[in-house]
Image (cartoon, rainbow, N blue to C red; front, top):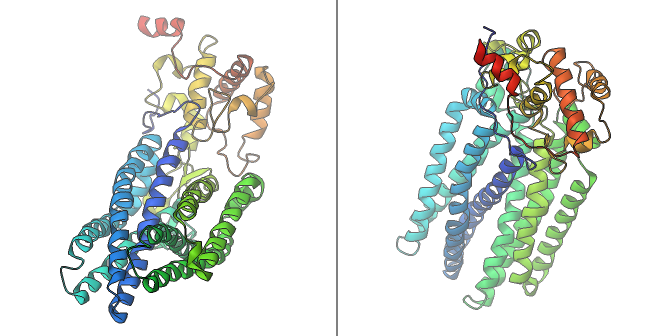
Length: 473
């Protein structure tokens, strides 16, 4: 029996791609979480201001904002958080496993802070006006610290997914070497700054809805506070992005400059200018605060800011899913001596990719003329679908367009044999691992896909001839 590797069943979402499913859930979660973290600090500041200046009407505004957080951030955030875990686990279980094995106690700490954060937001909402102001203020700042602590922790894991940043982690295995990686602090400060702009935007929405319920002086105070914090958030976030960019690995910079579409940058830059202009106008005069202006700006942050940014961050992490040793196709591609982890590439190259995967049907483990195309499809789904639509002509970097016009399997093979080698492969793609006959099977499948118009069923079936041989053994 061939040596089996601990792969998991593959979750393949035709056309859309499993990565896009994760991205949609994650973007909603990021909007909710960044709003809540930014708002927690803003509201603690406003509560301090209300207490010192004896402006009780500010508490009315704070309570309305807390209700918005409860209804949106903590409901949608609490749903999409497990949604990310579920979708990411089924999409790339080995990547999640690698992160958990390295950061299990870090994640445990994050969950403790999150439980405290959720508990405190309810306590704050229901005790406002019912306990003395000093006690409530202490709770507000505890909530702010706990909320920001969740970001402090999760950014270390997100940054490690991009790059450990310190080569010594591979030999020490020290969790601090992994957590405080090279781009940790610029990443943390960048997100922290931008979250004030996000929270400030929704804060202006709430202020516009309460205009008739609070005095003009308090209204202007709140608007200016939201505007000034928003302006600072946009400017500082952009400055910290420059620092963040300087800490990226070379492969990520290469992707930013040559692979990521330029219109992504145009969208984000235009959004930053729009948000900054909005805050400047509202800081100059509260009359510019309109719900039909502020709320669309908040939605634009979601569509033109967070989604493209998260998409770019995920793209520049390739070809890895975790720590520069697990490829996006779940192959362990590098030794980690400190963890006793060995690269699986030599084993796969010797035994064959299909042979070592326990979930590949027996009728496809040995390639024959009858099953060549179907075996190639299995390879495409297992090795390539993390970044490509391998059965359709739309969506996530489809094979049909990448290989448009290439209906000769030998031509496809010659291209791939030169393109996906350890020496020549692009920095954002893993090189092909497997036997030469498997690369030929993949080439045959690609040629067949293109010849059929670029769209085929995602179903993998063992040809009858191969199944009969297995049954007859």
